Length: 219
Image 1 (cartoon, rainbow, N blue to C red):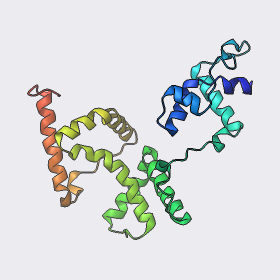
Image 2 (image 1 turned 30 degrees about the horizontal axis):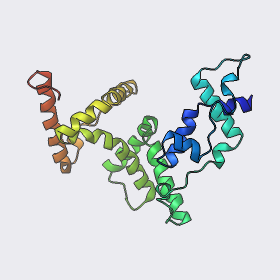
Image 3 (image 1 turned 180 degrees about the horizontal axis):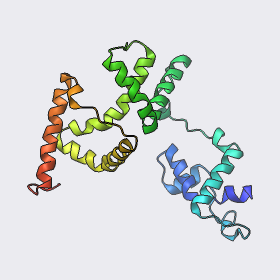
Image 4 (image 1 turned 90 degrees about the vertical axis):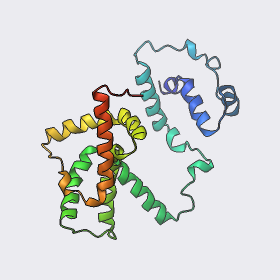
Protein backbone atom coordinates (compact mmCIF):
# COMPACT_ATOMS: atom_id res chain seq x y z
CA UNK A 1 0.00 0.00 0.00
CA UNK A 2 2.87 2.37 0.74
CA UNK A 3 4.32 1.89 -2.72
CA UNK A 4 0.96 2.43 -4.40
CA UNK A 5 0.29 5.55 -2.37
CA UNK A 6 3.67 7.10 -3.14
CA UNK A 7 3.70 6.52 -6.87
CA UNK A 8 0.06 7.52 -7.27
CA UNK A 9 0.53 11.03 -5.88
CA UNK A 10 -0.67 13.46 -8.57
CA UNK A 11 2.23 14.16 -10.93
CA UNK A 12 1.15 17.79 -11.13
CA UNK A 13 2.35 18.21 -7.54
CA UNK A 14 5.70 16.62 -8.36
CA UNK A 15 6.05 18.97 -11.31
CA UNK A 16 5.29 21.99 -9.13
CA UNK A 17 8.00 20.96 -6.67
CA UNK A 18 10.47 20.59 -9.50
CA UNK A 19 9.47 23.92 -11.01
CA UNK A 20 9.98 25.57 -7.62
CA UNK A 21 13.65 24.72 -7.82
CA UNK A 22 14.21 26.12 -11.30
CA UNK A 23 12.07 28.01 -13.79
CA UNK A 24 11.45 25.07 -16.13
CA UNK A 25 8.38 24.24 -18.13
CA UNK A 26 6.60 20.94 -17.57
CA UNK A 27 8.39 18.91 -20.30
CA UNK A 28 11.75 20.21 -19.10
CA UNK A 29 10.85 19.20 -15.55
CA UNK A 30 10.12 15.66 -16.63
CA UNK A 31 13.41 15.50 -18.52
CA UNK A 32 15.60 17.32 -15.98
CA UNK A 33 14.35 15.51 -12.91
CA UNK A 34 13.61 12.16 -14.54
CA UNK A 35 9.96 12.23 -13.55
CA UNK A 36 8.26 9.18 -15.09
CA UNK A 37 4.97 9.50 -16.90
CA UNK A 38 1.88 7.69 -15.68
CA UNK A 39 2.29 5.23 -18.55
CA UNK A 40 5.78 4.23 -17.38
CA UNK A 41 4.48 2.35 -14.36
CA UNK A 42 0.98 1.79 -15.73
CA UNK A 43 -0.49 3.83 -12.91
CA UNK A 44 -3.84 4.02 -14.64
CA UNK A 45 -4.14 0.26 -14.21
CA UNK A 46 -3.80 0.41 -10.41
CA UNK A 47 -6.98 0.01 -8.43
CA UNK A 48 -7.79 0.51 -4.77
CA UNK A 49 -10.70 -1.85 -4.35
CA UNK A 50 -10.30 -2.31 -0.60
CA UNK A 51 -10.50 1.34 0.45
CA UNK A 52 -11.63 4.68 -0.91
CA UNK A 53 -9.89 8.06 -0.60
CA UNK A 54 -10.83 11.37 -2.13
CA UNK A 55 -8.14 13.61 -3.65
CA UNK A 56 -7.38 15.50 -0.41
CA UNK A 57 -7.25 12.31 1.64
CA UNK A 58 -4.94 10.72 -0.93
CA UNK A 59 -2.62 13.74 -0.80
CA UNK A 60 -2.51 13.60 3.01
CA UNK A 61 -1.80 9.87 2.91
CA UNK A 62 1.02 10.36 0.40
CA UNK A 63 2.60 13.14 2.43
CA UNK A 64 2.43 10.95 5.51
CA UNK A 65 4.12 8.15 3.59
CA UNK A 66 6.80 10.57 2.38
CA UNK A 67 7.49 11.46 6.02
CA UNK A 68 7.56 7.81 7.12
CA UNK A 69 10.01 6.96 4.32
CA UNK A 70 12.24 9.95 5.13
CA UNK A 71 11.65 11.73 1.80
CA UNK A 72 10.72 15.02 3.48
CA UNK A 73 13.84 15.05 5.65
CA UNK A 74 16.12 14.32 2.69
CA UNK A 75 14.47 16.80 0.33
CA UNK A 76 16.29 20.09 -0.08
CA UNK A 77 16.29 23.08 -2.39
CA UNK A 78 19.73 24.59 -2.84
CA UNK A 79 19.88 27.94 -4.55
CA UNK A 80 20.87 31.46 -3.59
CA UNK A 81 17.36 32.52 -2.60
CA UNK A 82 17.33 30.17 0.38
CA UNK A 83 20.75 31.20 1.68
CA UNK A 84 19.94 34.74 2.84
CA UNK A 85 21.04 33.90 6.38
CA UNK A 86 24.13 31.92 5.40
CA UNK A 87 26.52 34.73 6.40
CA UNK A 88 25.35 34.60 10.02
CA UNK A 89 27.14 32.74 12.74
CA UNK A 90 25.43 29.77 14.34
CA UNK A 91 24.39 31.87 17.34
CA UNK A 92 23.14 34.75 15.18
CA UNK A 93 21.19 32.35 12.97
CA UNK A 94 19.51 30.80 16.01
CA UNK A 95 18.56 34.24 17.32
CA UNK A 96 17.10 35.36 13.98
CA UNK A 97 15.05 32.19 13.60
CA UNK A 98 13.77 32.62 17.16
CA UNK A 99 12.67 36.20 16.42
CA UNK A 100 10.88 35.08 13.24
CA UNK A 101 9.15 32.21 15.01
CA UNK A 102 7.98 34.43 17.86
CA UNK A 103 6.71 37.06 15.42
CA UNK A 104 4.72 34.47 13.46
CA UNK A 105 3.25 32.95 16.62
CA UNK A 106 2.29 36.44 17.81
CA UNK A 107 -0.21 36.72 14.94
CA UNK A 108 -2.34 34.13 16.73
CA UNK A 109 -5.12 36.06 18.47
CA UNK A 110 -4.95 33.72 21.44
CA UNK A 111 -1.33 34.73 21.98
CA UNK A 112 -2.14 38.39 21.40
CA UNK A 113 -4.91 38.52 24.00
CA UNK A 114 -2.63 36.89 26.56
CA UNK A 115 0.17 39.39 25.91
CA UNK A 116 -1.69 42.67 25.47
CA UNK A 117 -2.63 43.14 29.12
CA UNK A 118 0.99 42.70 30.18
CA UNK A 119 2.09 45.16 27.50
CA UNK A 120 -0.56 47.78 28.37
CA UNK A 121 0.28 47.58 32.07
CA UNK A 122 3.99 47.88 31.33
CA UNK A 123 3.52 50.96 29.13
CA UNK A 124 1.05 52.70 31.43
CA UNK A 125 3.40 52.29 34.38
CA UNK A 126 6.37 53.24 32.19
CA UNK A 127 7.99 50.10 33.50
CA UNK A 128 9.84 49.14 30.36
CA UNK A 129 13.38 49.00 29.06
CA UNK A 130 13.74 48.42 25.33
CA UNK A 131 17.27 47.15 25.88
CA UNK A 132 15.82 44.10 27.63
CA UNK A 133 15.09 41.31 25.19
CA UNK A 134 11.86 40.22 26.90
CA UNK A 135 10.50 43.77 26.62
CA UNK A 136 11.55 43.97 22.97
CA UNK A 137 9.97 40.59 22.27
CA UNK A 138 6.68 41.74 23.77
CA UNK A 139 6.78 44.93 21.69
CA UNK A 140 7.39 42.94 18.50
CA UNK A 141 4.41 40.74 19.33
CA UNK A 142 2.16 43.80 19.71
CA UNK A 143 3.49 45.33 16.48
CA UNK A 144 2.41 42.28 14.48
CA UNK A 145 -1.23 43.12 15.21
CA UNK A 146 -0.56 46.87 15.03
CA UNK A 147 0.59 46.46 11.42
CA UNK A 148 -2.87 45.16 10.52
CA UNK A 149 -4.72 47.87 12.41
CA UNK A 150 -2.47 50.65 11.05
CA UNK A 151 -3.72 49.94 7.53
CA UNK A 152 -6.62 52.31 8.18
CA UNK A 153 -4.19 55.23 8.59
CA UNK A 154 -2.71 54.85 5.10
CA UNK A 155 -3.69 57.01 2.07
CA UNK A 156 -7.17 56.28 0.70
CA UNK A 157 -6.11 54.46 -2.48
CA UNK A 158 -4.03 52.03 -0.44
CA UNK A 159 -6.46 51.76 2.45
CA UNK A 160 -9.48 50.78 0.37
CA UNK A 161 -7.54 47.90 -1.21
CA UNK A 162 -6.38 46.65 2.16
CA UNK A 163 -9.92 47.00 3.52
CA UNK A 164 -11.18 44.54 0.91
CA UNK A 165 -8.58 41.99 1.99
CA UNK A 166 -8.91 42.21 5.75
CA UNK A 167 -12.51 43.30 6.38
CA UNK A 168 -13.65 39.78 7.18
CA UNK A 169 -10.73 39.29 9.55
CA UNK A 170 -11.56 42.52 11.38
CA UNK A 171 -15.20 41.48 11.80
CA UNK A 172 -14.06 38.16 13.21
CA UNK A 173 -11.69 39.93 15.62
CA UNK A 174 -14.56 42.12 16.79
CA UNK A 175 -16.72 39.09 17.51
CA UNK A 176 -13.93 37.51 19.55
CA UNK A 177 -13.44 40.72 21.54
CA UNK A 178 -17.15 40.77 22.38
CA UNK A 179 -17.03 37.15 23.49
CA UNK A 180 -14.17 37.84 25.90
CA UNK A 181 -15.78 41.16 26.91
CA UNK A 182 -12.71 43.15 25.91
CA UNK A 183 -13.18 46.91 26.01
CA UNK A 184 -11.36 48.87 23.26
CA UNK A 185 -8.72 51.30 24.45
CA UNK A 186 -10.05 54.87 24.43
CA UNK A 187 -8.40 57.30 22.01
CA UNK A 188 -7.73 59.62 24.96
CA UNK A 189 -5.05 57.19 26.14
CA UNK A 190 -3.14 57.37 22.86
CA UNK A 191 0.02 59.46 22.73
CA UNK A 192 -0.30 62.79 20.92
CA UNK A 193 2.64 61.66 18.80
CA UNK A 194 0.11 59.52 16.94
CA UNK A 195 -1.92 62.54 15.77
CA UNK A 196 -0.88 62.05 12.10
CA UNK A 197 -2.30 58.52 12.24
CA UNK A 198 -5.51 59.82 13.83
CA UNK A 199 -5.87 62.33 10.99
CA UNK A 200 -5.44 59.49 8.52
CA UNK A 201 -8.28 57.60 10.21
CA UNK A 202 -10.54 60.67 10.05
CA UNK A 203 -9.78 61.23 6.37
CA UNK A 204 -10.55 57.63 5.46
CA UNK A 205 -13.71 57.69 7.60
CA UNK A 206 -14.93 60.66 5.57
CA UNK A 207 -14.27 58.69 2.38
CA UNK A 208 -16.24 55.70 3.71
CA UNK A 209 -19.14 57.97 4.66
CA UNK A 210 -19.25 59.37 1.13
CA UNK A 211 -19.39 55.82 -0.20
CA UNK A 212 -22.20 54.93 2.22
CA UNK A 213 -24.17 58.02 1.22
CA UNK A 214 -23.73 57.27 -2.48
CA UNK A 215 -21.70 60.40 -3.15
CA UNK A 216 -18.92 58.34 -4.75
CA UNK A 217 -18.36 54.83 -6.08
CA UNK A 218 -15.91 52.21 -4.89
CA UNK A 219 -13.53 52.23 -7.84
